[in-house]
Length: 284
Ligand SMILES: NC(=O)c1ccc[n+]([C@@H]2O[C@H](COP(=O)([O-])OP(=O)(O)OC[C@H]3O[C@@H](n4cnc5c(N)ncnc54)[C@H](OP(=O)(O)O)[C@@H]3O)[C@@H](O)[C@H]2O)c1
Image (cartoon, rainbow, N blue to C red; front, side, top):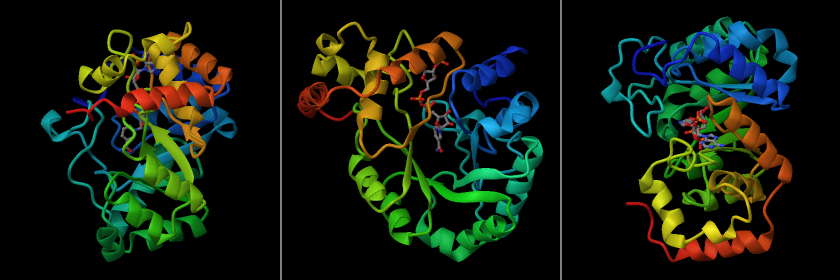
């Protein structure tokens, strides 16, 4: 793997987890140019199952990220190189590289990575670039990985089919934007829906999960794990269409699928959890 991007993988791990995801009936795969060898793994291990899943990647990322140092990546170990480039050349080359790496003729969704400002996208003609690729049949839908404050501009631009947004009841700061985007007819893809898993069980941080403890949510669990509760709380948001959950662990995958099959939490439980969290200060 590329140094500094993601966790180390044993040789059988990518094939096992990618195929287990599809075997479990999950039909949406999110990746990015700058997620190390992720696109290559998808191409090598599940390209032959392409009809079983929607494939979303990102653009604006440096095509060769091998030279980036770990300190140039931020936010919980997720690769976020600073030097994103939304020029026509960068986007077209990224799209062609993604198609080649993932051994496919089309990408269902291409999202601008890293929530670029509207001014940047307009100055670069970046929307027109994606629309050209769309006309050529190389991509089907336009998306953006959007966060505050630019997300409201992205909604107002009225050009995107899909926004990918971070959200859970522990980190609800994008709730209003999600509601507004969904009301405008955009598809909402959630990341961070399990807040990286409860510390101890997953990779979540005390900084985020302290809010769970302070709100004393354990007595709402009724036999669920906290991570399961959080995932079911995320899918309870009526404006959420797809939730992408990262995992390398087949047991976690099975737990998550089982949790989603249980469906959303009841409105009463969700309201009570939110009521308790309202009394807890935001993460520091
Ligand atoms: N800017 C962007 O566009 C951007 C940024 C971040 C992420 N993303 C996308 O969103 C996806 C998800 O985001 P994320 O990984 O930050 O957030 P997440 O899905 O909330 O958290 C994933 C983490 O949760 C752990 N986990 C999953 N299920 C668990 C379970 N049942 N019990 C305990 N731990 C569990 C996983 O660890 P284990 O492997 O140990 O299970 C993994 O480290 C990424 O894979 C990526 O595709 C996009």
